[in-house]
Length: 102
Image (cartoon, rainbow, N blue to C red):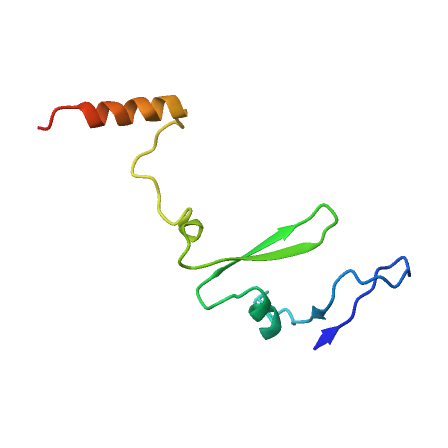
């Protein structure tokens, strides 16, 4: 069910055009209301990002399951190494590209 929200100063200006509720389950899970899923174009398998603003408001965004961003952090690095600067990475790539084939 949608609810109309107004700001707390009483001016009557809408902060949000609509608000939808969902109940937190015993497993601390919520179901995203269908209208919200439609608005943010969320599909099964998509990642839902929750961000908290400085005013303690929650912003919800979707990372599509087929996007490159959705893969971030899904695999561990092949080897543990110290972070490299871009110059070192370029030099390593150049060395690998110019090395004779074995």
